[in-house]
Length: 424
Picture (tube, rainbow, N blue to C red):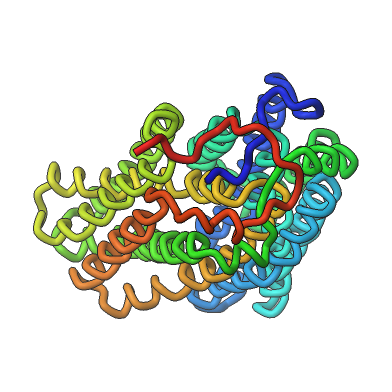
């Protein structure tokens, strides 16, 4: 059963130009927000640790705090998104982000830095990917949904790859404090006004939700499919975060040169782009869930087989590309499958409940991988990706007739338009 059943011609739904405009705005604001509040610390880690006279590990703890705060904020943020829409929330979140990044630029102690990143974690939950996807799911008809989510994810994936270079260039010319202030100014000038003007208002959000069907949160939490999705995306998130953390170190340890070890991650970015380019067409033909199962399986096999490749660059590259394919699909698949399965009215809340264990997985799995450090960590993360694929398989099998009683509609029943999976 497809929970979201609105047609693309329902009155009150945006036309083609409306959803494309929102995609363009989010492609810009998410690139700026993610590049400023997430990726910049990676580039500025060394100068910050030297200025504050603390270890790099201690500075990295700021990012961990940000992740955990974002996880704690996810559920209340999701509830607010479902009830009021994203305009006020995303605008406020961006403004909090500006304040937090300014505080970061002035940090003189580790406690000061941690305070700044506590606010950054809150700002990320309110104004970046999950919030943007929640707005897109309500603002687009099912026929346009996957294209909208894929477009934002693909453009941001490409654009944020340049943020490392830009931040590094700014730091070399201005120093890290002025660089962070510059990033704060960019966030203030772009994200705050763009979210205020472009994100649909509460009235528009309420009108659109009233025209859409979906599953109440309590019913979703009692549904087998929800917990299968949790298992799948928690396992995949842990696999991905651990490999991204350890890959360069692993390649260097087994005998690749430092240059090669540092260059191999580029293949991950390229594979992400290609997987997302092909995703919309493949999902329309085979269904998003089936495409995701295949991509997670490819990712898992690539990781499990990687220790057997030794220092063979072509074979290693093939395994890295296999990982990148799964990584590229996962960002888009989660909101798409959740919207298809549980509908629109409580989408943000359902997505948020799943975000909490995902954040814990992203924080904990890398620690286990670092402890194992050698080929065993690849076996761990590869098995996790294969588990993720296996957990999604039951979602492709038609459910028993009694399922309709479990997922009572939270809104009007409208004509079917988008089918989650093609007929078996």
